[in-house]
Amino acid sequence: MKDKDKNQNQNQNQKIILQVSPKDQQIAFLTSIAIFLSLIDAAIPSPIPGVKPGLANIVILIVLNNYGIKEAIWVNFLRVFSAAMLFGYFLSPSFFMSLSGAIFSLIGLYFCQKLLNKKYFSLVSFSIISAFLHMFGQLLLARLWLIPHDGVWLMSPLLFLVAAIFGLVNGIIAEKILE
Image (cartoon, rainbow, N blue to C red; front, side):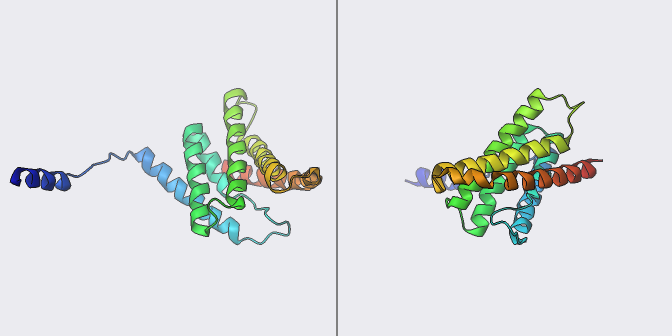
């Protein structure tokens, strides 16, 4: 019996040491900024319900530019899940709207990065495309799940205009930060 107790004590005293690279620290820092910007987004009043500037997307663009799509996906999903937990809307329709927008946006950023020549397309272009796809993903989910009526699409011109404006502004801010 004493040997078994001794082995259990030794196992409990063992420490797991994780190696954290400077890149990991930078990604964690950028993720925390994205979460913070999501909190600011939520505090900004909007004349159109549910429409926010998407300030965290500035960070996603910077991560995409500096580290790549894999890291941008991680940061974006961590942001979406963390914001949902902080605001208490995890697994609610708002969470799924946010998640669907993030998924469509990331798919767009992936294809932009793989297919478009960065010589001719800037982060501003990526940001506008991402904003359009984010809005499309949310509208599609709303149409398929929340409001199963084609009238949802009647709002799309206004929502896509707002997406273009915020995509343009966020892309310009991301480029200015990277300069």
